[in-house]
Length: 427
Image (cartoon, rainbow, N blue to C red):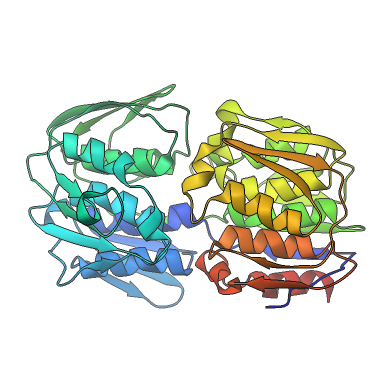
């Protein structure tokens, strides 16, 4: 696909797609709760639709009238054995979180996905789930999908110090802990996004969080709720960056989720000197706001430590932002980038360097030397939606040559109307 290049004067207002993480969890919580859950502003991207179909396969009645999704919850005990293996598509969130839910069933379930999922490590979830009494195993004894999860109705609680900072792993353990008999204690390596904890409370559950320590006793019964999904800050990040680096631009983004465990990119923009205004519009339980950015003079910074889990999905587009900042930006402690839809450390460095950037990949991050002009090249998303969208924003800076993107279709995973929204800003 040939990308749009050489644009200035990006101006306008965009309604950002719904939050991917919350959309996944809304279906999951609706399914395992008792009674009816209604979901508004659900993200109908490929990944979230994989979660929806997975729970239909497990016997949950789910209706979608195009505006509202209604989930008729069965409770944990009402889930039924799928008639065949469940296809999670490209969704790492689906396969990891559903393992925790399946851990407490009285049947076996097979899970598989696309070629990218087949390369993603699952031991980080399998090990704690197996310690709780379920049986999870990967293909031919490995940690890679396809997986088989054999649940047990007598799950044991767990005391677990997490070796990685991962909201997916934490959430899988929490789903299992809700079904275990007794109190589980989870200690995070670094605090990660807390949508699962928030939604446990929203659905009537009990959970205690003190710093990095989480305590949850089971078994618990959850009750169906109304969920209104805010806009996804990970999707907003691409247009935040465009507004900051494209000359003569001002972009306003509506209804962006502002959960503090997800707003690391806002902290980075401020530290780099970006012109960003925030008008909060949400509630205490549904934090959201309107964000406006303008073309800014940016400076390089170091990004490391406890902020990394708060912006892990935004690091590819932050790397592009850094190519247009004066000085060097260093990203450390981001090993998790290696086990996303692709190895995002290598993918970011390889593809942006093709376009004229000066980026050094490291074992745990990137060293980005700015400010660099970009030129045309043939690039690839590697089937990773966030790499694809990042490369289109990069192409807007290109004045010489064209940019051809392979595997552009991956963008539909989280932002099906991405190119339409971009078109609104320069037409």
